[in-house]
Image 1 (cartoon, helix red, strand yellow):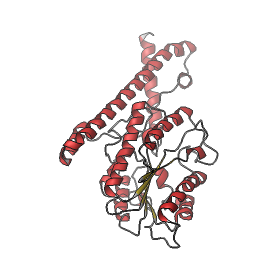
Image 2 (image 1 turned 60 degrees about the vertical axis):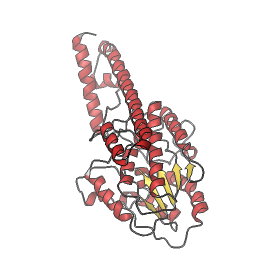
Image 3 (image 1 turned 90 degrees about the vertical axis):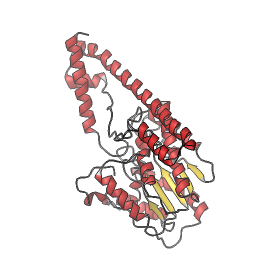
Length: 369
């Protein structure tokens, strides 16, 4: 390839990637940072009006960039897994301040968890890290207050998939109605927050959101923001399982009498390769359950077929967040376990009021819903 065409290819690919990255929404499951997916050669040819000869010359460079990106992502995933292993294995011999210092050395300030298909761009999934925006900070303060209100027998934790079900946001009113229909009388409170990675959930748990609550049951669904929109490496799958394990450890530490209902990560995107990756992660997550204090719940065969194609009406138009049918599938899986653990729902409910979107308090804030 001559120099001028190679330069054209590099500039063109960079421009398309920058455009794709700026167009990505910032909700659950979309990249907040890191490289955007590469366009295929056909899309590049159309966007740049390339001739066949130009496309043939650019094609090998595009393939080279894609291979390098995947190799880098896999190596970063391995690095993050090894880094987490070091912290965990050293933990028994270190004091808490020493462990905090070690984590800070291994996870420099300012790094964030990735949501792409290759590997985490920031700290490993079992390392706490907050969402860095005003809206999330305000939501955290609200949840700290919420934990002191009402009676909480069932504590629901996760990302926006869990949050949209039990919020008072007007946009999700039909989901809240479904929540009340299924859970009224069990004193169920929603502490999930939008766009959270496992790292973000760990940070919220480490900063007081479960302190003093002492629920009888904890329902957890998280990890899709670590999965991202494309299949990843084995190292990335292991990293996500480690993150879930760390969260279960926090539950045991802060609410030792609670039974955890650990929900399998939901299918998304109608993508067979991605579904196979999610199944691999879920197989690892399932091994964390003992059937007693940690109960594993997998309703995915009612949400999608064996190839990961979502059944009609289960998810909304983003193929990620459940619609009413999808939430009802989850509820139908939860209710027999709740009945077994708590008995039938009472005629009165004393759970704290559902959380509202804090945007009114922070008009320009950005964050997941």
